Amino acid sequence: MKRHLCLLGDANSVHLRRWAQEMLARGWRVSVVTARPQPIDGVEQRVLPAVQRASDWLWLVGAARRHVEDLAPDIVHAHYVTSYGTLAARCGRHPLVMTAWGSDLLVTPRRNALLHWLTGWTLRRADLVTGDSLDLVAAIDAYRPRQPAVRIHWGADTTRFQPAPWADKPGFGIASLRAWDDNYRIHTIVAALGRLMAADPTCRCTCTCWAAGRARRRCARRCARSGCRTTSPSTVASATPRCRPCWRSARCRCRCR
Image (cartoon, rainbow, N blue to C red; front, side, top):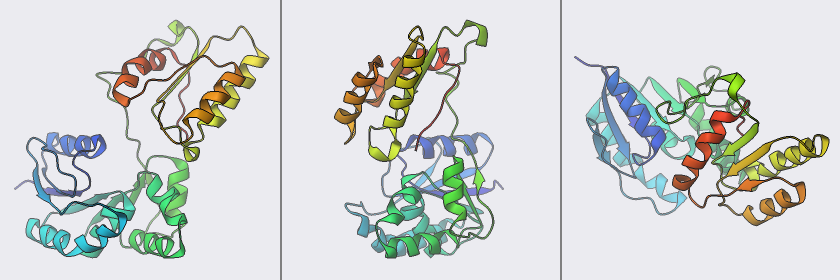
């Protein structure tokens, strides 16, 4: 009999979909409990009532618990600590893995003391917690989970993005699909590029960003003041093909939070 993994998360998210597809490819049975359904070949989905506001998650505990009990998986894996993670913690089935995505630990718990307490309570119910960056792992460990967090990168789709030979890389490029919001610190990258170009005017440098977010206009002005040559696609879909050559030519890639 196949081992059974139950994922709690948004079925319309590329991250959860790739996780499900990879585990299917490894021979697992995979099911998904989700409030945002989208078909995934070979995966059974149990759909929760739609969520309109953050407080709605509190009313989904009963439905989530019934689905998990009925599915009776070998492992439960919740994606996004402050929503599906809390549901999974209330379900009480183990082993329980949680994966933090970023804002669920770096933004939401800082809004008030209750959310901070609930985040800690949730994390301490997991048998393992993962994150994709050192700062996220540090944020997890600050809540004193059952064991130290593990860093696992999301990775890249190598069928679309292949590295070019190092010697053939012509210049310095930065590509980012992060929204231009303050918490992603795009302005820090822009300032660093300005200093680089001021120190070496002959530097061939480009920056490709997804031009969306509350700080978009402010970041664009900083780009102009820094002398950075930028391109700003309006959607992730249009940004991806523009980012691809930048990623291939860049000698360094970084991710800001």
